[in-house]
Length: 393
Image 1: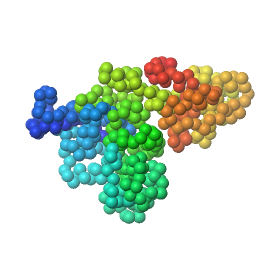
Image 2 (image 1 turned 30 degrees about the vertical axis):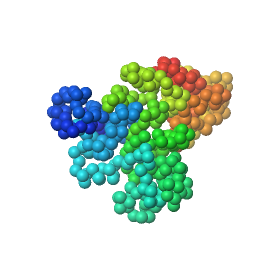
Image 3 (image 1 turned 180 degrees about the horizontal axis):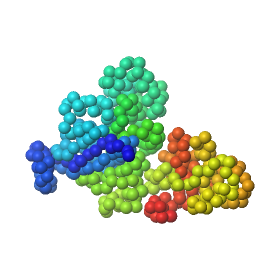
Image 4 (image 1 turned 30 degrees about the horizontal axis):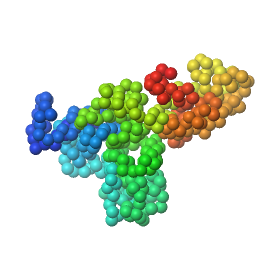
């Protein structure tokens, strides 16, 4: 069973001169009419668990409470009532020393407006978390170089933040968070200040990095397209409350209320649904030496029209049922329609042209080249409808 990385239970944040008294009443289980209190109810009764290795996105419009919520997850805001646990440790009631240790060892944050040190070089900014941990200087430099390369910064280690573009500065912030070596990344509107093309590139890079690293990511955004592209699950907030938590297909096909339904009605499914989200993970895996007769029998028995051929633990292409039936004496290696595979983070809108010209199905793989599943033309088209996302088509 996957362990819980972050757990929030009945979180409230009331910005008010009466906050302490309101907190005592809430903690005692009283019903408090928050519409009558003096101040602002920024977060109201928010509860959720984030699994280790999960990308959990909190989405809401300006003023919905999402940034206040994430600031309670690293102790920058103290809850009026409720608890936050990080890796099983109680953050809410931590002493100042415990809070500093949790921030240093378990949680890193990427801010919307970069929050870089202007007097430090890029390399020194990236290494800052390791410096706080008193890591040896050689390790700081090595890790800085490694993570700058991983996020596509190139050879800019000796430059200063004001010499970089906005997109490059955000990459520095991401590299700094990764270099700190924490298991949990909190990202508060990290890409919202960037131009659309740069933003899309960074979204893709984050998805690919996550596939390799398996970090626990809590990402805040006001953009539903971004939320559904990045999140394994998405929490939708409105007026301080979480109104629905679900996967992208769940939000699209089963919105909790009219508010969520209005949001998802305008979503461009071709851009937010990815190959990995809609791939058929049940398609048979074929031995390269299997005969057409054997392949046809297997595909018919399992109700599939195509199977994936895997060699040395890597998919190399597909064999359609029709080809196997036409040439029963040939092997899978001879019947193979070669396909190097598409990365699972690829938006399905990028695949229609290729799917239209390639027989059988597209191979979907992770960043390391391992098979995720197959994506047929029919499945690709069905993903654009609610029925297809429910698995009915």
